[in-house]
Length: 178
Image (tube, rainbow, N blue to C red; front, side, top):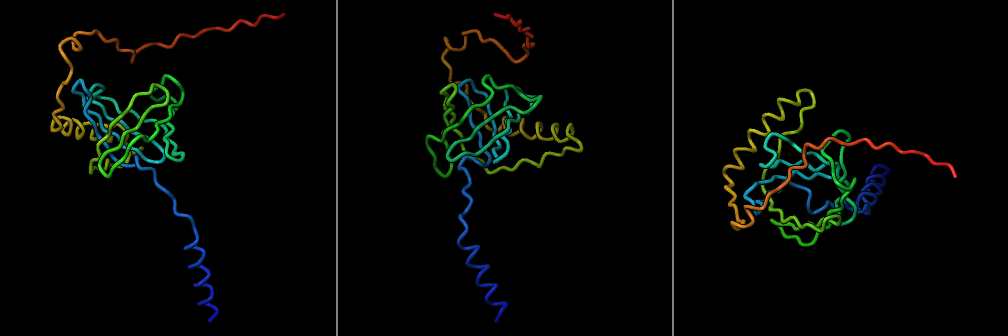
């Protein structure tokens, strides 16, 4: 009898717990950009991993925090830099196979398509081998996606600047006493 009382109390306690709501963007996604490049995203409640054909030999990882209907993205120490230390991605539209996120910093929108793919867990004991394997599989999927270049001829001739390899300039601050 005593055991059944504890079981009933345990059941009531579990039943009264508020379910943890998972953000709609958590999962694996892809998209084709207008320039024909292909991107894959793995979004968890802790990080966002990006693979991009324009940065073919690089895996980009940002810290991620879920807050209500938003994803707060920030850079990891010694990781890829974000122009503003944080960016918030707001869910604009969602369906079972598509989501549109909008950046509050640049007001860019990202239309992501759901894909049934699960990246192998990151192997921190042999990071280089994991990275090599992940990039090899990604390149195959990118080739199969065959994203078309939808830019006009005029858009294709606009010169672009690659800011990826800029060295940070150190600025010294001089104190002035009044």
